[in-house]
Image 1 (cartoon, helix red, strand yellow):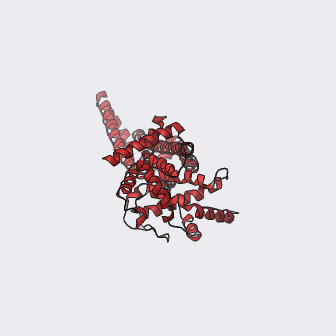
Image 2: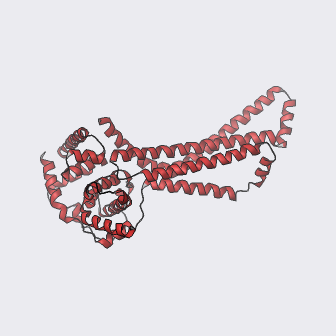
Length: 217
Length: 164
């Protein structure tokens, strides 16, 4: 192909035109920080963890805590806290491992596969967080229904008026809770989309190109 | 020990910096993004340097790390931003590097190359660097046959672009 030959000739000729950095300039460059996507995913996951933990300290939750401790929910509550911390640390470790594993020295295809794995981990992390949140809301509602004295009075009141009424009452509660969960989850989904979605988008573009390679083989 | 290897690395990179500049030329459109990608590749090279065992040539290793950075790790959005300069690293690139030819046809070819996707750019870059298909396939992790097929497709793509 004539055009390619022409290009190659010009390419080899133009070698002299490139800047020639001194050793001092190269020293100053490598002392700067890297900005790769995977590193940011790792950093953001830690920042997020710190944010939630800090919020839970600032929030006025003593009243809720007393309520929890006064009831049978204490066991469930503390088990859930412990399990969720373990899971969050596991995810942080996975993010760190992904970050370490992304070795530029592999060939491009292997590197891309690792990037895909990172994408998957982030998605699992978001799904986990959202389902945990739904579970917490659900438990909160159940706790409120079964322990709060006002609700107990209300319940007996409704019950005394007929069996159908109690059914309708629970139906309404279920619908309202589902709507509340849906609203809260979509808010958080939006939040996650903002912080991770944009990073993942960049990784996705690479994935598409990888697919093109894979299809050829 | 650390200082020693740093000194070693800087010396090697300084000697072979043209490879990085050439990758930047294929993957970026202007001086700022060139500098930015140059910086990112240098950092990735430095980070990966402890893993460099010398069983391949330093330059071969640079091709791999440099292309990987350009294709997968570099923040693409920066390539299109043409506003303020990222902090000056202290060297100048003449604008002619990006507009270096009076030859209308060459200009068109460079433009057509810029339109290729990132992996195709990598293949054509290695081709321009006179790498054989074995080396191209090793660097990108595809089979030799695939590298050939893709090179042929690139040629067709360029031809279509140029005759349009």
